[in-house]
Length: 479
Image 1 (cartoon, one colour):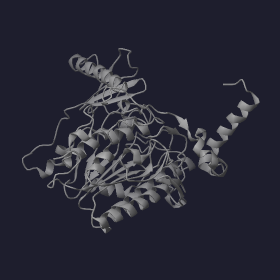
Image 2: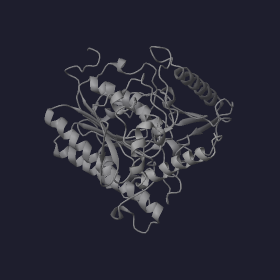
Image 3: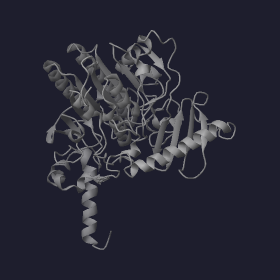
């Protein structure tokens, strides 16, 4: 099989990757949320493979998005946190699918181009736009987005009216319809802006009896769930539902202070490497191949790329050799492979986490945590027995503690080598950043600031920019 091509006998399912923005592990109806009803996610979970221990690779948004596209922990890829740009030397999942003959498209939040602030349309000149990483078609914003967004279709700005989740699913379905009519398999990525703050939900989506903050936050989830129903219905109408793999997850754990527990009783929230910051809802629906069941097999967003390469029989060279994910094909095929009479029980490769000065490693039921890298202090938890990570076992289980501490230290050293470019052919990072730019500081956006200052999602950011400029003018010696 030549590089970048599919064998004639290889399967060619359509692929749709769907990712929520800040949806916590406990924020679905099927997990018994006290006020939320998510009938469409519940239907997916009742029909597909429900992954109860699925992990976002990072506890905030950009890192997890980098992991989906690379199969690697985000710190290897240049994306240390939100507002960091993905290295152009990375080998991208979308590029692999493009080389395999798929129509590739991205809809929604991008946040891999080093731009901070509320989501604005991605520039055609942006060196890190989705097209640089293998997407034929993109309708995209830099970061989170809400009601009535302005988006960028291949660099051309377009204004939309309505709920952001429903808008991007509607646009994705138009592109999917075109691919179906052309007889091409499609690889479609839908990255929501919900339920990231600021929250704005239509009155009919707000949960009755909830205070303003909770009503709008949970109302965004209601609208997002409805859009998932529209996506599934569209696939049925196009006659491709049976052989389309839809993989749903969230980009990080849930938020505190939204009126109700967002993480289902887990420890921590978004931004932490405790379970509440990284464990997220996940469902894989593929009627042609995956039968319904619930699994507690630990899996991660880093597994998506290796899984699709394995399923489609693509050359492994489409991925970088140093990767952290594994193929979940044996897990997906369990009930269709009559030679297997037991569940895939153990993950053969630990799941790594490294965010800022914190690190963790999950090896099936065990999780080792270092709250400050280099401190020499470790914590060990049995996640099966201790959902809230309350009982440190490091001293009482010395053999496993020592083994996992060594593995964690090796993982950190490996990531440090990756950050210097060891994984790339050039053995160095050839283009770094820029990282952390606010779009108000980017020259190409300046002509739009007056007009956008009237929009509620942008007014605050533009006011901050102008206030800082005013202070600099009146006090030239300030830094």
